[in-house]
Amino acid sequence: MSNQPAISDRGFDVDDPSLRRFDLVREGARRDGVEIVHYAPRFPVPGTKAEKRVVRSISLLLALSGLAAIGYVVAFVALPFEYEPGRNLAKWYTPILGLSLGGALFLLGIGMIAWAKKLLPEEIAVQERHNGGSPRDEQELTGATTLNLLDETGIRRRPMLKAALLLPALGVGAAAVVSLGGLVRDPHRSEVFFYTGWSPKNNGGKPVRLIRDDGTPVRPQDVSVGGQMTVFPDIPHGTTNEWADSPTLLIHLRQEDADELRGRLKQVPRNAAFNNGTGGLWGNFVAYSKICTHAGCPASLYEQQTNRLLCPCHQSQFLITDNAQPIFGPASRPLPMLPLGVQDGYLIATDDFGIAIGPAFWERP
Amino acid sequence: MIPWRRPAGPRGRLRRRFGAAVRLVAALTLVGGLYAAFAPGSPAGAEDAPLSAEAQEGKRLFETSCITCHGRNAQGVPDRGPSLIGVGSAAVEFQVGTGRMPLARQEAQGERKPPLLSIEEARKIGAYIQELGGGPQLPEGEDLHSDGDVARGGELFRINCSSCHAFSAGGGALSSGKSAPGMEEATDRDIYAAMLTGPQNMPVFGDNQLTPQEKKDIIAYVQNLKSDQDPGGWGMGRLGPVPEGLAIFLVGVVALIFTTLWIAGKS
Image (tube, rainbow over all chains, first blue to last red; front, side, top):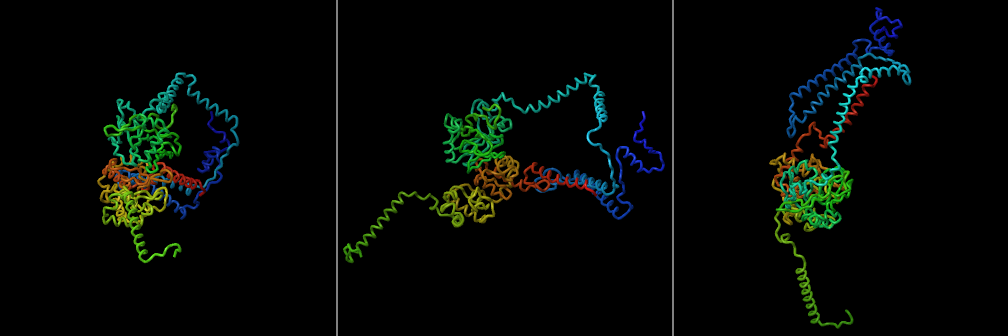
């Protein structure tokens, strides 16, 4: 079989001594279907002032690139990088690394592009392209090549490989399903949604005390009128993410606001039925779940004059003096109320919320 | 002269005039006595106890700058200003010292502005309000952060303050035009007074909830945050990676567009 391409049949002889190197370059491009129609040096007369200026500026760019790279190495090794409060050089460690390494690469790139644009010869080359789809024989040839590739793997006559391939396919698929599926809670075991850390069954049937983030219990006099406090259930790991559904906002209302709320408790029968029908408040204290009923953000922006609780995520607003009913924004259900009481001088939750806290889910009644 | 009256002699006229004067005095005494018996008594200590010299100066300032909205005895004026009985000198120093009071106009909330009264004048008014109705007071001294624990203050700030004032103490929006202010300009005493008194819609954090030491911890954290330098020099409001990423994306894409134009352009 001859390696001689058909295109060389035009009588081009590579051994012809009269040919210059560029003639070979032009012929090589022509055989690849590219015709060089214009080719001229940027600076026909070598050593002009203009050429020297271009050469100098490219050299400068490359030298600066090298300096910046060295600066990166020096900064990486020598500069302090550990956090210190206040104004100091460590605050500039990352920016200096970024500027020096980025500057080195940027200057190198600019130098190379400037080289290509200012020093390489001007060239116009034309390549023929056919119009429309490929010719039929071209399509046949490509199809045959592709099928041949498949035959070469031999998967058709080696069924064991076919079965072996199935294993990683199944395994990787199962890995994806398991890692994503672990995020989904079984909706048919929905009882986990309906109790929180405040349920007395977490405390041996006794009511759960309210504690702060540092674990100390809360006395009523700890919260001033017009004050609020984030409280957690006094059970093991009660302040951790294990009981992420339990953070609650304890609010000490003014007398007139508490009276207004007591007058409206009946509008949410669950709140009025707490504590044997006396309502979920203890004195002028009221507690609402901190988890927004829209998307589960902490709705804890408490406005003590206007008695609103705001959720920062989507601007839902809840009116504290009206059972935390939503009055603005996308939330559609009130924040659940936690029934309060006092035991041995400390605030307790006399019962759980009695309803699923937070946003909606499939099996929500 | 009224025609149907019998003209009286000089003696009768004198007696009648004297009798009228006696009746007038008697009636006034009766009315005054009844009023004194039934009118509500003045609050004990408000007017009886003499004011200190500082409070008297404060009273004079109060009567020129505050009385329109808060009333003659700081009892408040409906639809204008609340009663100041029991707010304490801490609230006065915060509201007047940060320029929030006197209000420029009735609006969603008073904003910090260049103070109309000096801090000394604010403290004098504070002394007057304190002696009038009592209430929370600030500790002595300007430096309330040096003996605070920054790390514990950070924990307390994140659980109590950050929901409204943001993690970086830059502030945030509340409902209906209100907002939680940023703390860029707040002094130690401003922050302490705000926690102690709960100005405007801020909740009150009394000394039982956050002890004076915990308040100092929080102040130490906030002042440390403010004095800390942003890595790279520009925090962009310290809003986090989203606006920073957006900025570098916009700047970077524009830079890339011009670079590609330069590369592909005819030389």
